[in-house]
Amino acid sequence: MILSDKRILEEIEKGNIVIEPFKRENLGSNSYDVHLGRWLGVYKNDILDAKKHNEIELFEIPEDGFILLPSKLYLGVTEEYTETYNYVPFLEGKSSIGRLGIDIHSTAGKGDVGFCNTWTLEISVKQPVRIYTGMPIGQIIYFKLDGEVEISYDKKSSAKYNKRTEYPVESMMFKNFKQNRE
Image (cartoon, rainbow, N blue to C red; front, side, top):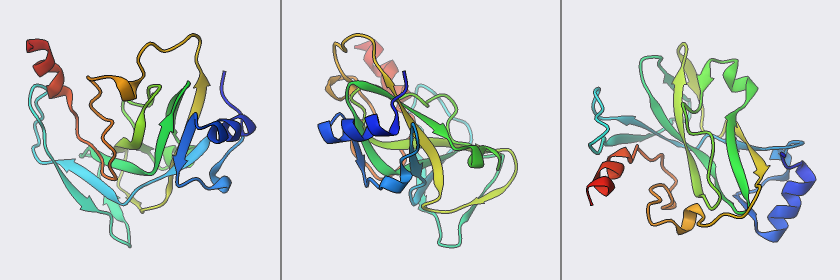
């Protein structure tokens, strides 16, 4: 079951959903529109290794925009910081973004109950396209849970993406290999 606009507002009042900054005009019938933050990141190396920390180079999107190229993976970030309790947040690209050939995530569209952060976007394009800070980039849909959560993401010791940031965050897959050795 997906939450309606009225239900999203009720859950914001209760503190089960946090969106900062919240703007009423970004609330759709059953989703909330999020916007592209000012930072992008690209991996420093062309070949990535899942067992190693692959560092990114961060840069600010210029006022006149930035042209994304099909040969690169860009890590973007939402302007909005969110917290979600008792619901499962899903981030999907807006149809207008898809019609420009922009994908905002490869596999990471689902958040976890207790996720508290901005959303890192895994941006790829089909052809060159200019993007701008603050442009609508996606929408968050909230799904109702069936049953109680034993340990929410914000309480898990293994949570790798809960440190609040305004920057995109690179893959922390390498930490999985470290944990398996311990």
